[in-house]
Image 1 (cartoon, rainbow, N blue to C red):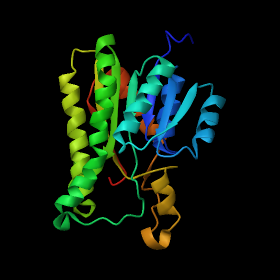
Image 2 (tube, one colour):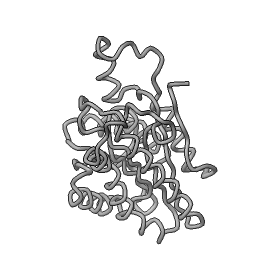
Image 3 (cartoon, rainbow, N blue to C red):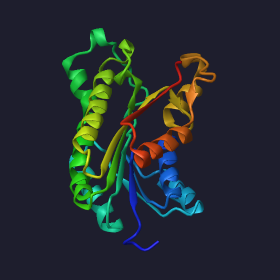
Image 4 (cartoon, rainbow, N blue to C red):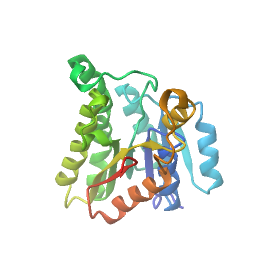
Length: 243
């Protein structure tokens, strides 16, 4: 596809589960894919898998909490592909084994630490939104946890950041109505298959128990993400394995 006609999706938080499902789903629609994750250790495999599916892709290493690195990476993607047409924001937990304090024990330091996953979303949007508005088209998709809409006291500070991210997405959706730019929220409750957290939990049944069928298919979530963006008939979708 000629560069002038090709659109690009940035997958910020590229992992083997939902991140790669988003990449494949948008790639099937003709989008080039820019993958961003904290390290590049798995990037060759990701890019190769996309290439095998006929999808143009490039990978970049950046920790979203490093603002300068994040912004320079988005600049590099924009320079390489010409535009950033869709931004998917779904970075995972930095420390999968980090214990959580329940909400009754959450401190202000805990809350500030949890919000470090929220602030980069604002930075990323600030970098890509002006171009989208100028072109009159684009999309912003944010993946967050079920604690944004359902009280889950055991998650403590994570519930605060999940609610903030959801509110940001929905408020952007309202603000951008009529601008040609869509913003939407994916609310995810449960283990996403093939993802790192899923692999951790299922590898330690003595610690976490048997998850059985209480998991979510990332391809289904990615299909819905595409539908949200393409149809623009609702601002969010919820996926729960706890029904």
